[in-house]
Length: 470
Ligand SMILES: *Cc1c(COP(=O)(O)O)cnc(C)c1O
Image 1: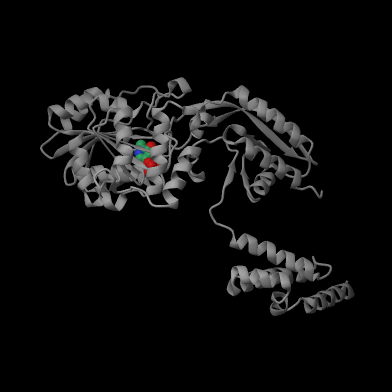
Image 2: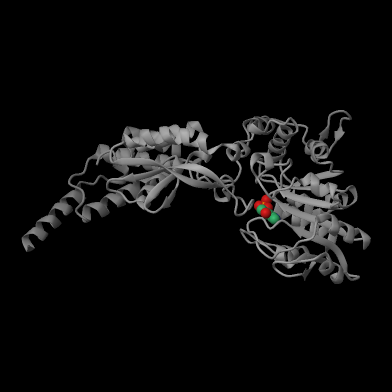
């Protein structure tokens, strides 16, 4: 026993002595090229890290010999990872279409093309080419919102949270805003209606109850300090059963009778009626304007399927005051967002909904998905150690829209002879490109609703490579 321990100690001591010095390694031709490309500091850092990992492994007795070529390769691989971008594309096989952690809506190809065109050179962002004088960045999207929604004016800011904050600050700072207790929501990422209200300087006046609020509740809370009635889309939750919420028209009538503003935060918001696409409970922003709302806000990267943005549409007078608020300048969007948003809404005005990835994914039928899933399952089953079957399941729209509503889908359910589903999830997540799926009942689940055909090929390649030496 003792002699064994002593001999393994002397083996590792002699292996440790064989580990080359940092400088010696960095002088090898491949690594000199690396140093030129990454700079001395990063090359040195990576080399030291690889050597330290090697020493640890030698001490654990898990390395039989030191091979300098392998070491060199390891350093190059590590350096590649270090030098790569932190923000990287991932394959979203979770079936959550507007996945906030994965960047919400993928934007349309033509929106991307317009963005590239605007970003790579100069543009008329704030220059009126007819008159040859300074213009406003609002004009590029305003016309489209006017014609699509019947808005008198439209403004775009960084996101919907900013839109709500800016509108409340402009229109109700120091005054009371009446909100139903059933709508005091939290979206996640610390957007809570009461907190945003407080930060805007407006005073929140809660009325009604969690499940039922009537027009008379709003009416009896109105006093000389009231400036606004605020209606909020419940977004990510649903109250079912004994519920009551006034029609928007009734609230508008009440607000205007008392000379107050009515604002609606639609959250996800959409531009057209999506019920033919199978989406319930999301009324287009244009309907809120028709009902008489003064200001309506919604996100650009939820159901709209565009870039991150907050859109404010409504009547001329309140929107002009919002435009003049110095906070607008702090929350405004850049040319990239304007370009992507302009191209996205012009897809709507031309009625070409299938050009929008998010809407295309929502409209995909279970049968279409099952056909692709069947082919993928067959390919996965030919990979060593894997079996794959189809299972009925559900995709979700996500992004705080359509709570409780799911889309039927066909999942590829994967198992491996030796690895747990949790291990599969981790392995595919940590590859490049990362492939993100779900784990349920010890199966690794892939939902192709959110995966493009090109990405599907990447999934196949990944299955061919992982655990292939076992
Ligand atoms: C999502 C959401 C927001 C926040 O929108 P962002 O664009 O994420 O800032 C605000 N209000 C409601 C009701 C929402 O659903």
